Length: 301
Image (tube, rainbow, N blue to C red):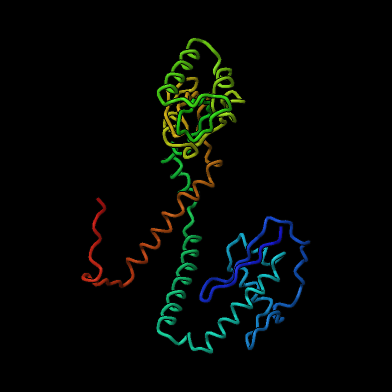
C-alpha cells in the first residue's frame, strides 16, 4: 500500500497537517541538530529558521507533532512551502488588501489570542486539593462502581447479531424466554451456567455473563439505571435495551477512592472554573449589544 501524501495547505487555514498512513513507513531519520537561527526553508524573500519551524510544529495538534518532526518532516515542509508560495502570490494579487481579508485576519488574531488567554486562565484556575475533595464529597454517587454480570436475550431489530442456527425471536418471545430464565435462576440454577448456555452476548456469555467493573456512563442508560439500583447478590427483573432483554446480577458495589477518581475530578471540575473566570471578565468589560439587532433570546420550548 502506498503512503498517503499529506493534504495540500489551504490559503488562510491552519498550518498544514500531515496525514499519517497505517502502511509501513520508511525508517525514521533523526532530526539533525542545527543551530536555532539556521535558515532551513527559503521561499522567495521569506526565510524560516529551525527555531521558527519548531514553533510552527508546536502550534499543531498533539497527534501530528511527532510525524511532522519525524517520518513526515519532508512532506510537512513541502506543504509549508506550498502555503508560503500561495500566500506570496496572494500578496502579489493584493488579495491581502481587500476589506474582507482584513476583517478575517483581525478576527482570526482575536480568536487565537482569546484561545491563548483561555489556556492561561485554565491553568491558573485549576482546582486545588480542597476544591477537588469538596467536589468528590458532593458527587460521590457519580463515582460508584458495580461488578456486574448479565444474560442477554436478543429480539428482532436488536443491535446484537443472531447466533448461527438460532431463531430470530420476536420481542414477545424474547420477553417470555428471559422470564423463564429468571425463574430457573430463582429456582436455584447457577447464574453463570445459565449465562454460558443461553446468553446472546457471546463475549460475556463465555465468561458466565461477567462484565467486570462498570462505572457511570459506561453502558446504555436503561442498563445503567437497573444495575446501579441493585443490591449485591440481587437479580434484576427483565431490562429492555436496544440490544434486547437483560437479566442483571450485581456481585458487589463500592465507590472509587478519591485518588482513583482524581483524573475525572480534574476534568469535570476544571471547565466550570474556567467558565466562571471568563464570565467574570465579561462582567468587568464594557459590552453593548444593539437591542434591535440582537433581540433577547427566546427560551427554548
